[in-house]
Image (cartoon, rainbow, N blue to C red; front, side, top):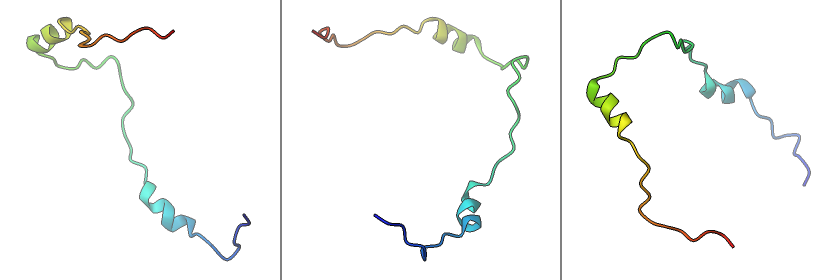
Length: 57
């Protein structure tokens, strides 16, 4: 398959959908507020598979 030299794409127009947004870097020193209920829910999390699958042979 050969490219068509007449098929021109306006890069500025296409790239306008990809405007960058400025965001803050993560700072691990910032403490996120959490409630006792959230902490207890995380502590009680367990992976409980509902089905068993045979091991591959």
